[in-house]
Image 1 (cartoon, one colour):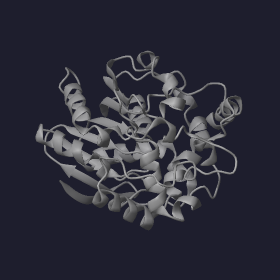
Image 2 (tube, rainbow, N blue to C red; image 1 turned 120 degrees about the horizontal axis):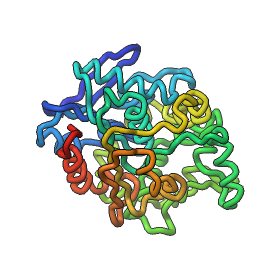
Image 3 (cartoon, rainbow, N blue to C red; image 1 turned 45 degrees about the vertical axis):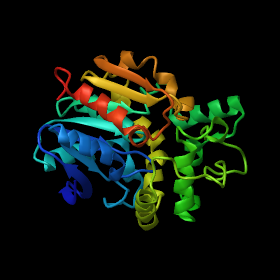
Amino acid sequence: MNTRHIQTDGLNQQILEAGSGPLVLLIHGFPELGISWRAQVEALAAAGFHVVAPDMRGYGGTDKPQDREAHTILHLVGDMVDLVRALGQTSCVVVGHDWGAPVAWHCALTRPDLFRAVFGLSVPFQPRRPKGPPTAAMAVISKRLGLGDLYISRFQADDAHAVFEADPATALRKAFYGYDGATPDARQSNGFIPEGETFISTVPDDATLPPWMSEAHFAEYVAAFSAGGFRGPLDWYRNLDRNWSLTAHLQDARITVPAAFVVGERDPVRHYAGAHEPGLKDWATDLRMQVVVPGAGHWIQQERPDEVNRRLLEFLRMPGVA
């Protein structure tokens, strides 16, 4: 595996790269980095693919635009379009996890000529809601459930990143612990934050690193987020309503390229994003695979690398995919 920087249109991107052959692009989520895909980069490269995992806009070794409005879904998809071109390719298979999944789904939705297949992890495609912006709907759901605010709503605040930047190591440790499949039910995060609490304070103070996370690997995350901060990553969330406005032209559009979706059975994100799982086949019209991994949590490509690699290779070897 090689780490290098590559200049695209207006953005210098750091990428983790290995192998030769058909291009597979791996898009991370929050709070992750390109290194979150090491197991997949290694396995796919060994299987004959050119695998690239970038640090996304606002993260790690990639440029961090200062304007909040520079983190819309159109920018994020555009970054991947530019990256494919900068790599000298004309098409690829796109894979996304967590926030990277909506980016991957929208890559396939808007540029099926370039992204010839899509593989989503943890977050299913969520079609545009015609009745209004998403944060208003989240507020209604939160009020009805009476569990507090959905953390995405809290992330809308201008200073939401400050609590993370005050102690990046604690924030990251609790984030990984709270959403891991090995964490007992009563100690997992449910995504909702009671009044007077924060995303971080809702996770027990004695939270440990997940079984799959070594101290050395964790130190890489801490170093990256201590240096780069959390403002840019949270700006992705702060653009949700803006994304809704910018994608009116995609209302009711379907994903037509070959698609796959894999989610952990114990992924807490399913509490608030899983409603779209049963209807995914209606929005991804060539859905080839939909799998729930028993016992797995949110960090599925790191929790269950062998299972994810097996499913990825199975998908990539299907007719018309790679």
